[in-house]
Image (cartoon, rainbow, N blue to C red; front, side):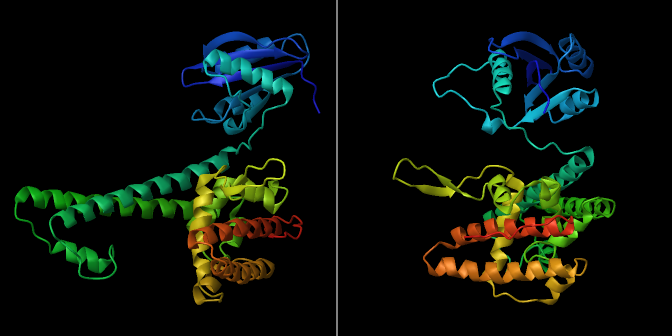
Length: 375
């Protein structure tokens, strides 16, 4: 392990970076100043602070500015860490927050070893993450446009007589609608066009995801996860794009905790109190797993759709998926019969589903996975 003689905290913003410095030892951390958020500025600073021998360690909080500072510093040969903001120790009575204080505090905590680094994706991984998140954003826009169209129709007493909406039959019914005024007819047509345009954008983005998957190094993991019930192409792609190499987690329980699917706890002495799930970590994967868990309300079975999804997975992965289906289906109803709400039971199933995802990833990546106890 390297020994650093200087610790630099960076409070990164769009246009500027505040710099705090703490030398090895017990001296107080000091505020260096503010520099422009440009590569030449912080690389020049890094070169200046690294003079005189020894090693310098840089850190900054993960945020909207991304990983560009990290990548440029590490490429230039400097050590840098991106810190999890939610895990930074903070004094309960501290009520003053400035860029200067934040930079100095980062340097001081970095020297003390109190900061928790996050996993930084490479450019290929980040590109896949951007792709899946863009599809998710466009899908949200589609849902909003559908709600606006539905609200407009409801205000004017236009109720669809069929069962399923947003099908070809539904759009044929929309084409036959007429409104009293020309202005309302124009508004209606604009709403319909917005919905159709959003649908085209979602379909186009999903096609781009399929194209990108063909050359991705983690393609076998995506295909392996698709063998699981409730995990289709979009869900599997989202999980792997967000988490990257899932085998970097030492255990299934570590993955569950990372996704915020473990119960919160506030215990003291003989008193033990557990609450709802922590909801920390990656919310995109947590949402996908909770949605997938609802499919385990139905009895375990191997349908034609499930067999087709699992075609590209090897036999061992298919056995893990079948084992997962048998356990999770029975687990769901066991919890329901104990008096748990359906939403609580699905959350518990989602937590265990994360464990089977970890096991499949270890199998596909050729790493030995230990047996995981879910109890």
